[in-house]
Image (tube, rainbow, N blue to C red):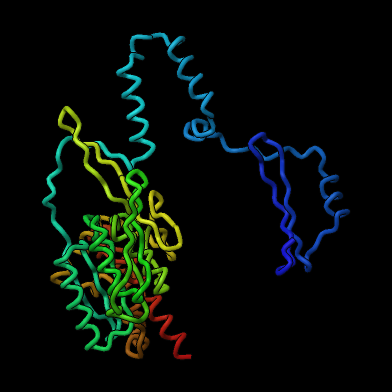
Length: 377
């Protein structure tokens, strides 16, 4: 019983041996006595238990102990119809294949040395509604860091008091030292940012903010599957210290430092050798950073918008053009522009593609506006 809340919940859980465990939660307002609970069970003695979901292959595999795994392999070798297919080479390949499948973010097999020259997203900035700064960081590199410093100075001169930091274009960001420099622009001085933990080398690298932040105000983070590596650590450390809300989708789950290990045949085995850990001990690998406000958006739409934003800005992809509404002239004419516009949209829907929108950025703007309204009360 919880002495503070005074509540006892009734829950049922199946243990490993399929026995049933009960836990009771007492709610004083709707409390049930022991007699009432017993009577409830007595009224339906023949009630059949609800069927459980069929376990998946992964569930079954994870439930096997060491003895079961070894016995299964021995039984396969001695009973399989084609024993030649289970030679040492095939068994070794099966082991490696299993590791690649079960640890897709931690172990990656590459055909050869990758071309490291990639198109890196630049920094993009815009101001919404006169006081909300939008800052798309792009790749977390030293060039973009200098650009971010200039944009933050510009925001300060224009009295920007809320900031939307877009990390959805940071796919090439795996330099944690530079990621820490980005974090220092927003996090309090003297605070531990994150630790890069390397168990094999028994050597950890801790990053701490050693400067005053360049921006202090409301911060909202935009993230998705393209938010990876150092950008993931940046997103969560801003949530930790600046109470920043994260809007969008779960990040890539690759907040790790990789080592590319050459194989004799020329291929490359990329292995995660260190992982980013927050000051509270939370690791971001392999589950990634989960958003506070989940918002779905097609990745193709996002990339199309980012490509066009350099010429059009982000506003056209957030705000809808105002439609004509019912007025006195329309009333006298017996027409309704609002209904006519909807009917025209319905007729044209099959002929022309609707413009793409950025619902993630729209939700972030809504959050900032809502906070502003609340604070003015």
